[in-house]
Each structure stands twice: as structure tokens, then as C-alpha cells.
Image (cartoon, rainbow, N blue to C red; front, side, top):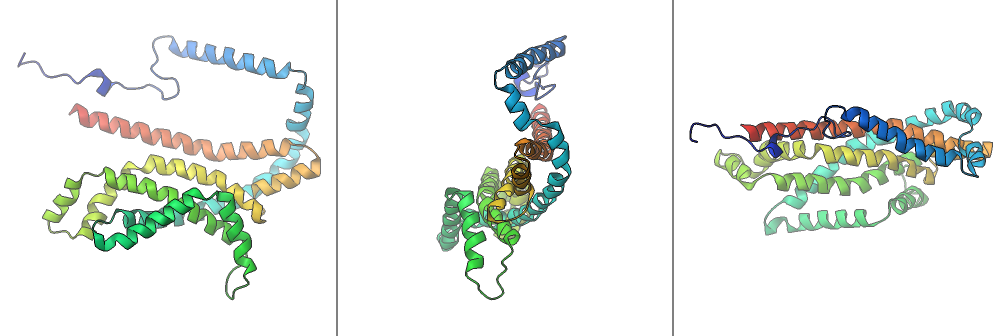
Length: 287
């Protein structure tokens, strides 16, 4: 038996042909397609044959109103994209600062850890709409000099404060997943604690948490619609105006489809990142 090369258990090297379809055997693709057609066909049949379907179709699936409101609502989506890009840039930086503060060891850094913990606990506990209302309506009402009153800015600030708390915890999980021996090795090479954190720990931690960071980005994309409550004319507020003007709910269908087109590619990108990381881990285990 000594001359036989050890084999890696199949569970370690097993691959999935598709995260959606699972492991496919010969003919499995046709079975999957057939079962999907049957299931969704039955669901569709039950919906369109229900007694109230004509009213629902007229209220939510009016083709004329759909194409009439699509250009206007699509243009309003640009405001949400602006909010998302700016907020995400600030969140990634601020959340990393919070995560580092919470991860600092020793009693001398206790005040910084306490501030980070209090901040994260508060903004994860308070409803998002409440924070947006307080900042978007309360801050401009103070009429302080040189304080902006633009609701877009306060919506951006609120989203940054809210999501930084969640992303900080993702960063912290990544930092804690790096084995302490990595930092010890950095110190043995003459690096300071700060240099070890910057050049050794953080690069590994951030690389490990990219998929959950992308999931948070998807959540942030949807939450940009909440700034409509403080007067920002973005896609959801434009949808409300269109629905009120047409006395029809079809514009909400347009809004939902636009968010699907915005978030589904991001979700598939997350799946690709997870699959790539799994393949890398399997390759490392196979060595």
C-alpha cells in the first residue's frame, strides 16, 4: 500500500456543474427543464384562470401604461445609481476603519473598541427609515450655517452610516478569520503591528469577505429607494408619481423590473466569486 498514491476523498474534489442545476447526470438537463416547465406552467395556469385575474391584469400588467412610463422611470434610476456608487465608496472605507478599531487588542485601545461597538450596535438596531427621516428632515431643520439642506446629501449620509455598521462586521469576520500566526510571522520579520495589519492581515481578510461584501452591496442598491421618503426624486418616487397619475399599479412593475436588472447581475457575480473561491480551496486541498 505504500506505493499507492493517496487519493483525496471525493467530497473534497467533487465539482458542481452548475450552482443552479446541481450535479447533472446524462439526460439530467432535460429532466430539469421539463420539471421547471411543468411546475411554472401549473402555477401560471392557476393564476390566469383565477376569478380575479382580469382585474389584476388590468391593474398591474397594463402594456400601454408599461411602455408609456418606462422611459421616465428608467431615467429616474440614474439617481439611485449615483446614490449607490457614492455611498458604497464611503462605506467600504469607513467600515474598514470601524472594523480595525474593534479589532485592536490591549486595554489601551478599549475606548476605540467601545466606540466602534456602540456605533455598530446602534445603527444595526435602529430602523433604516427612522435614520433617514431624522437626518433628512431633522438636520436641515436646524438651519445651521454651512450645513447643506439637499435631501440627496442627507440620504447619502444616512445610507453610509447605516450600512457601514453592517459592512464593518463583515470586515471584522474576515480579520478574525486570519490565523494569529500570520501576524506573529509579520512581527518576526520586523514589521510593526500596524504594518502587519496593513500588509499581511487586511489583504487576506478583504479577499475572503468579497462575496458577503457584494451581498451587502445588493442590499444597499435596494435601500437607495428609501431616500424617496425625504423628498429625493429617484426611481421609487417617480414610480409613485406615475402610478398616481395613471391610477394604475403597472409603474410599480416597471420599478421592480429595473431593480431586478440592476441586482441580478450582481448576484450572479457573487455566485461566480464563491465558485472561484471554492475551486481555489479544492485545488489547495488536492496538492
